[in-house]
Length: 337
Image 1 (cartoon, rainbow, N blue to C red):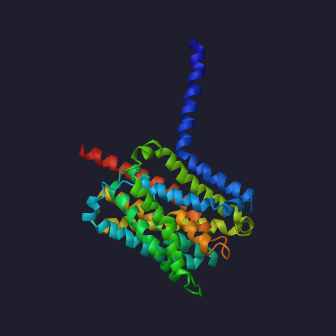
Image 2 (image 1 turned 180 degrees about the vertical axis):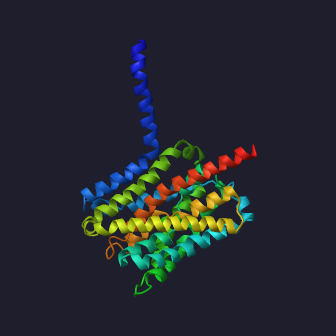
Image 3 (image 1 turned 90 degrees about the vertical axis):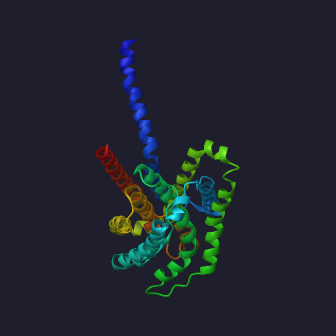
């Protein structure tokens, strides 16, 4: 019996470790599978368009965002508007201008458009707050940046894109149509979910994990659809992808440094600096997809690739940034103790 226990125990421990590893990193594995699957099943994504699966799924994802939005902790941020205001200026003005200026020097026209699309998008909804929690940051500030950024970003995207994309060439975007589409697809479901959050309190508490998995799965489906629909073009552009990756790594690093610097300039404390640096630097792929698929996909099929690369980059890099902030927080507590 003892020998069986000695043999079985390492297997149990190994299984537990593998389960924990899968729970922690399943999304990164899913990205790899979405890319490989999309490339292997080129042009096999017609069913997504035929049944509007992505449009419906994104609507549900933003409805979940409103449903799970907790605003009880935001009152303090309303009285301390300095950080959220700086976050909006950085996210919706500085980052788009910086990204467009740098991309114009080193990337092709199609990639420049893609960089402009992701740069003008609002901040992420889920991952920014999650990583703020990991970094022991100011969670109410992170939530406020999320709410305010997505509300304002919907109205600034059409005009920002028109200015940035049209630089150096003549591009006319249907600004009013784009604005109404973003309001309908993003803002309306968030508001509906928010209005129903009290009535569905028990339901959302029971399915919190499922909601998170669904939202992340929608990102994977967006990546699969983009790769499957652009397979031949991706193969032709394969040689340029390493340059794009290097550019995005440099751009996101620069954005993180810039936002950390802004946080220090306006005098934020360490938890608020953590929230500001991480959440203001992140961009949402879902809104970028809506803009790309509605107005750029036919003429610029590769223009979503920078957004996908940026999303992957921010997920990996900001995990390490959050861990670094967490370590600094623990060291600070240790010294004060």
